[in-house]
Length: 182
Image (cartoon, rainbow, N blue to C red):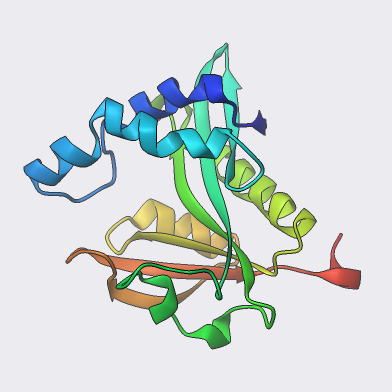
């Protein structure tokens, strides 16, 4: 496992272009998951320390990735953004957290622990950055993602529509900080 790099963006965009696990209208899918749009939107994840990501490879091919954003509750969110609507009481007192933006594992690599390894590696990134929690969102019908998050200690803090009409679940995991960090 390694940090995401600029050379990974095409493979990540291609993986996401299939829109697996997303509920969209055909029009939304055509726009949001067009390769050029994805490449443009994903490029910042490989261009600096904030945001970032992790990549796993198998036999020289992309096996999985996790993209994340370093956030605070005080960040300037656009009007209507879902994060300010979440209960602040579930976040660390200083408001710092890591938001998982995307998690994907290649179909041939699923059910082998790779998603778990990526999420655990993201916990290390978050702790090293001083974040006291990790936030993730999944569709309410995505049973595999919900099971994975529950097994890793995430708890639901909101369920319902967030940025569209699709019911989603926001889950958070508190992380050790300061003297409690590993």
